[in-house]
Length: 136
Image 1 (cartoon, rainbow, N blue to C red):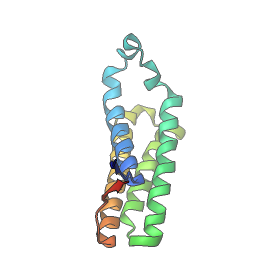
Image 2 (image 1 turned 90 degrees about the vertical axis):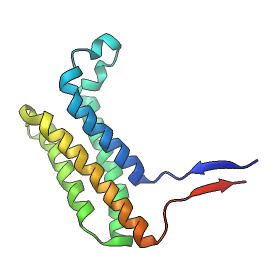
Image 3 (image 1 turned 60 degrees about the vertical axis):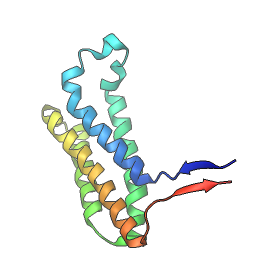
Image 4 (image 1 turned 45 degrees about the vertical axis):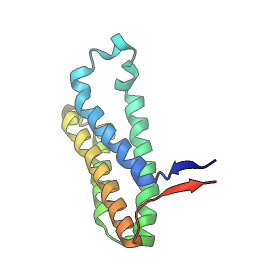
C-alpha cells in the first residue's frame, strides 16, 4: 500500500505560524472581550504571546540561517526576519504596548515574508520544487 506524505519545510511552518500570528495580533483588539465567553481567553495572555514569539524566533533562525549559509547567500530574508523579530521584541521587552496593534502584525507579516522569500530562493537555486514523496 502506498501512502502519500508531504514534506513540510521549516519555511512552510514558519510562514504559516507567522501569518497566523500577524492575523492574531491584528484581530485581538477587536475580539478580546469575547474570548472568555468561548473559553479562549488564554490567547490574550502575555505568556501565550511571548511563547509564540519565541517559537517564531526558533523556527526563523532554524530555517533561514542554514539556507543563507549553504544555499542562496541572499540577505533579504535575514533582514526581514530581523526587522520582524525586532518589532515583536520591542512590544514585549521595551514597553511599546501603546502601538502593539500596529507593530505586532507588521512584525508577523515581515517574518512570514522572510520565510516565503527564503523558500522561493532555496527552491529556485536548488532547481526543484518541494515534491510529494511516495512511500512504499
